[in-house]
Length: 238
Image (tube, one colour):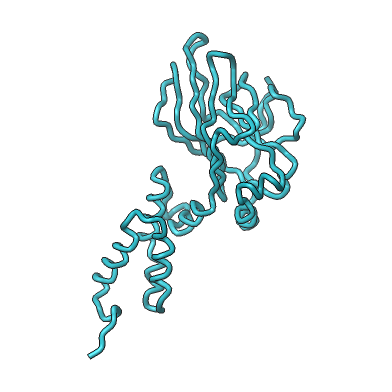
């Protein structure tokens, strides 16, 4: 009598699939899709958000997404598409108020729906508390834009900090709802910490060499399917 895995109860099949994705190996998504694509009966498991949640949180434990905002399967795809630029590969990596108050950009991650800036802001309380990091902005500007002007920019819509001491230090990340498109070629993406007084930091100059170096072509294609850019916030010059 011939039997197949499909003859097993659904509960056992689910246990097998959870085992496949339950191990922290590199190709868990590939293996999961390979198994669930072998036959029509298995394809329904690929639609089960429980599996995608496990794989998404493994890659981004800070994720706070829910089914009300975006599916876990879609978020897992966004994680796959995201690119990270280390701090030492940024054009500049410090937004400075003075020698005692300055923000170091540790790295920048480019996602299909956002740009995540990891920061380490320091202050010595000589001028009082550190400015609120959630008032920081990013902006796309021409190459001759002034170092000190406050540009039209996008503020963060999500942040998380492992250290949040307004007297001395903020360590964490800021998410900005912004999509890089082909229209950005030839311009600089800049970051300015806080409310005012900090220098603009050129994170990177966007050109075809930059796009090739960090393999951003898949992201640019993805951007064309994403909703239009958020409204930029107009801020005052300092």
